[in-house]
Length: 319
Image (cartoon, rainbow, N blue to C red; front, side, top):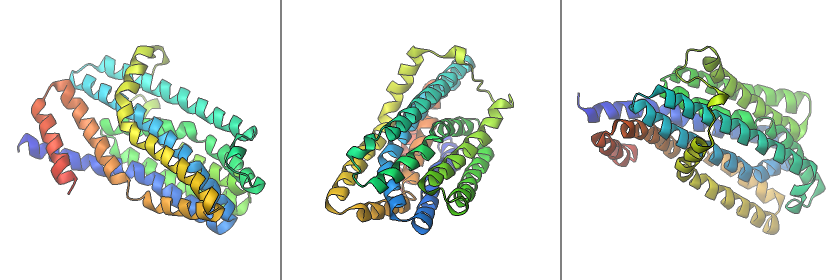
């Protein structure tokens, strides 16, 4: 079998799992929207709509870290340099923990101090948004770390574990939303906590593999390096630009809807975004698989494989 056919088989074997990672977000958005609209009301849907730019920011940070670290780790593995691969993995995890915890604390502080009142004038809607942010903030470290674990487990061919983690995430989110929103009547706080519980389930199911010591990647905070951190961010930011742009787009549209339509329009916009999120995983999944394969080819200095990968993407992938 030719190298091109082998790469094609590998590409489309990895693609479903990368798509699945992004489908989780879409499924969780739909679950949250169903509970919000049926058991809380339009204020909850408005809170989801207001939070959407922040969600895009978190995913852009995750993609930046995943992109940069995968390129460096893949290149190191292609050069059979396991020590460098472990170092980049450790730096990536340290960055993920630091950025996610800092972001969560800043959001909690902003909600507690009433900063979001600049955009949300209605006190009822502002209270709903603040409570939703409190709940979502609890899951921010799990969201960012989960993205990293998923990417590295895929590189280690642990796709069954990532699939199990994905289904556990959706089940946990659905069940905990029912408990917090329907049974305990916690409103938007419960809605946010339900999402956070799903994200922590997703993260911990995958983290068990690293705690077991079976992984080739061993986390060590002592390996953290600012030089490697900047290298990861420099290589990763091009892959995150689209999410940054989407964040600003959502923010601007939210302001326009509030000014000219009202909270009802924001609720509708949030519902539409939840459904449209089902379609985005395909191109983003293609990008993730391409990045993974390209990084290894760069490490091996295999020019032919680079050409073959781009041919697969631009022909079979687009089709």
